[in-house]
Structures are given as C-alpha cells and as structure tokens.
Image (cartoon, rainbow, N blue to C red):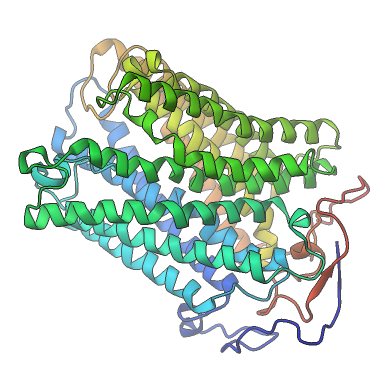
Length: 548
C-alpha cells in the first residue's frame, strides 16, 4: 500500500520525553505521555475496569429477577443497580470504547502521521475521562442514583433523593473527554494525511471515526447543556424542566434525545469501521462497494440528528410529528443495510479464513442485524406504543449496542492486539471465548424479546409468575456471557505477558499499520513519512497468515 520516502519539510511532531526509537517505561512516563499509542492503552485499561464494574451491577439485578417476587433487594436498591449499570456502560464503555482505544491508537498510523494533531489535548482527554470516572465512583459510595441512565425530569430535578448531581457531573465530564477526542480525529484526518492518501484511499475505519468525531462535536454540547441545566434546577430550584416550578419536562426529553440518539451512532459507527477492516482482510478480497460504505457512514451521522422523536411517541407529541419521525427512523435503516449487504458480498466473493477476529465480526453481523430489524418494530408508532418501556426495548438496545458494539470492540481488539502489544494470543482460547460470548448473549436477550412482547415492563423488580422461566433463562445466559467476557480478558492479559512475539504483519493485512509499522510501533510510528501508492484493500487473494 505504501513506500517509505524522506520528504523535505515533512511533518515533524513536537519533541516528547520518549526517545525516538525506544520507550521510557517508568510510571511517570505513562501517566504523562503524549504518545497516542500509550494513551490508547491507558484508555483500554480504564474502560476495562468500568466494563467489569457495569457487568457486576448487571449480574446483581439479574439475580433479583430469578424469582417473581422482589425478595433479594428492595425496589429502591434495584433501581440504583440498573441505573448505575446503564450510566457506567453507556458513558464509560460503549461511547468511548472504540474511538478512545483503537481510534487513538490507529488513526494517526492509518493516515501516515506520527501522532494526533494535538497530543496534549489527547492526554487531557484521558485525564478528564478518569476524573469523570472518579465522580461516578463517588456515586457508589454516596448512596447511588435511581433515576435511570436517562435522568428524566422531574424525577432527577426534584424528587430523587440520591446522588443525581454527582452522576450528572460524571456524565458531563465524560462528554467533554469525547469532545477533545473528536476534535483530534477531525483535524488529524483533514491536515495530516500522508502524501498520496486521498479521501477515497482512506481506510473505512478512518471514515467511521471521522464521522463519529462530527457527531460528537455537534451532539455532545447539547447533552452537556442539558445535564448542566439539571444541576442548576436541582441546586437552585430554577424552573426549567420541572412543571411544578414552571418548567417543561418534555423539553428535557427533546434536548436529551437530540444527543442521545446520535450517541447510538457514536457507539456503533466506529464498530462499523472495525468490521470494514476485518472482513476484507480475512476474505482476502477487496471491500465490495467502498464508496457506498464511506458515504453511508456520513449519511448515518447526518440523519441521526433527525430521528430523536421516535423515543417520544408516548410523550404527547402530535400524531403528525410522530409520523415524520417514524418515516425518518425507517429511512435511516437504508444506509445501515448498505453496509450489511456490502460486507456479505465481500465474504461471498472471497476466501474466508476463520480467525478469532473474523469469528467476532461474523457474530457482529448476525447480532446487529437482529437488533436493526427489531428497531423497525419500535419505529412503527402502532407497535411502539404497546412495546414502549417493555423488555422488548431492552433486548433491541442490547442486540444493537452490546451485540453490535461490544462484538465489534472485541473483534478490533483481537485484530490489532498483535500490533498494539506485540504479542500473539492463543487462537483456540480466543475462539472459545467468542463462542461462549455469542451463546451467552443470545440466551440472555432472546427471552427478553418474548417477555417484552408479552408485556413485562422494564425497570421492575417484581413480575407475574408466568414470566419466571424466561427470566431464569435470561439470568443463566447473563452468567454464561459474563464467563465469556472474563475468559476473553484473561486470554488477552495472559498473552500480553507470556504470548509469542508478534511479527510485523501476522494476518497478511493491508494498510500502513501492517505494512510499514513494527509490532508494536516505535514512539513516532514511522522513521520517515510514508507515501501511499495503492488503493485501500488491494487484496489479491495470495496473502497468507504469518503466524506460528
């Protein structure tokens, strides 16, 4: 894909503490590094901690739901568990997972730069993220929060006697961390691409993270203002959202979902980029319809700002407004379907190699497709009204975000792990964990489609006895799913210490990160600025795996 060439006047990053070709391994050098690769690994550690914490809360309320009667935790404590699960998983795992880890690590390398445009801002984003995490942890030790992750008013502004202010502050700070990352991605892609790397030679992973950066920049300030207004109303009693104070609670929903539905695409667009790298690599085939995938990525980012009202079909908005939002929600499924079709045709025309990343990628396609199709049920007003706030919505969301985003995240981590860490993991253990995760996920959330269709409302800790079998299946699946995640994490940690050294391009993949950089890359990525001479994904079918 590229040759290395010295260019007079080529971009030279600011001098950092790290030596040009070797690393300083002191703790201080890690905590104050400005190298994008180290910051990505720091993010990976932080996000993994929050992922495990969110999973613990999920298991706690699934244990409650083993029996119909609310006999393990009282309703108030149950509310706090599912709220903290949602807040942690959404703001501290799903939203930052791929952009903050894989995006931070790969965007500069994939565009031929030696770092992101603003290394200090990149480091600041990690510190802000961890400050937000400290506020989230303080919520745990100060009584929890019971409003749900959406912080709906007037519950969050007047009636909740829990740590709403700390939870809102945590989400507020996490949003600013995302903004700093989005700025870096946009400027880096615009200003620091290597010679020859035109827009339509960019890897689709770059298109996905660029579009994500645009959504972050346009949407996150809105939710930041919304959360700030909650704090103002709660602290000083200013009537903004609470009707008792002269406010409008529906206004809160409009402001919140104007960001929070595009936030779905902040979560999933980077995952699309991951899958678009893995499918052609292990199909040994050029990606089918590259321009369509690139433009569909941008169209999803744009259209995502016009569909927030489908969360509010039962909030009192007019029937005609609901019709418009219903149509737009179904319309946005088209560019998503384009991606599924293109990945499928890429697989069909290639020589598929079933490695661990490929197994995760295929699992992603299956689970995300189910999540997308069931989303059309909720886009239709006639179905959404009876299904609103039932476990059908919970199952749909988790198939889309966890079945989609988490599978894509683990696919990407396994794909680029040899490049990030310089070690190989055992393929058998990687595939074993993937199969366990896929099995546990389906056993957890398929029964929730059924119980939701039967009318079981979400966020209730007690339910009629006739739904117990489905809830037992769901809790059993959650146990299997948790074991699969732990097996995956254990496999990767083991490989980081005792795995075999990775070669420069163990997968026979295309791209600057594989064809030019060592495993792992040295501090400044390239000894000279690369010059791109080929189209993206120029697979010939003759590439071979270079693993022992």
